[in-house]
Image 1 (cartoon, rainbow, N blue to C red):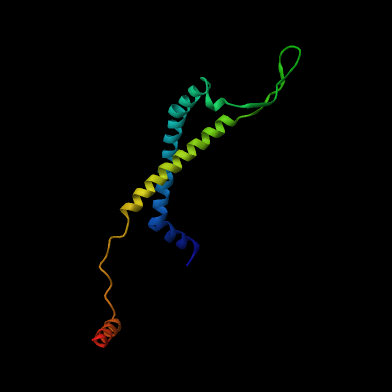
Image 2 (cartoon, rainbow, N blue to C red; image 1 turned 90 degrees about the horizontal axis):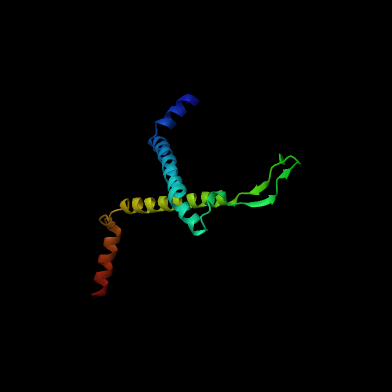
Length: 135
């Protein structure tokens, strides 16, 4: 089988299409969660921190160097930890919602109680022998 025909067979499988749809929906969902965190959660956290925008929180490692005219020679070196923490919150929210979705999905996909499998004839025969010996 040639590589092109193998590739066609691979793409034709339902799993690849399902995966592609899942990735597109996941990317769109990530944007929704980012908008939630940026627009609703972080302003509340910033309000709790004294009205400061959370994404702009940073530690100055080195101040900017200025010349005599006040022009910046070298920029300040900043450690921007606010946006990093905001991205972690995005990730945790997305992971939590995916966890809840998969939990509900698995509950719906739980195998139904099927009728017990038929007992093999040799087991039935051994039970009859056991029961007759007890008498």
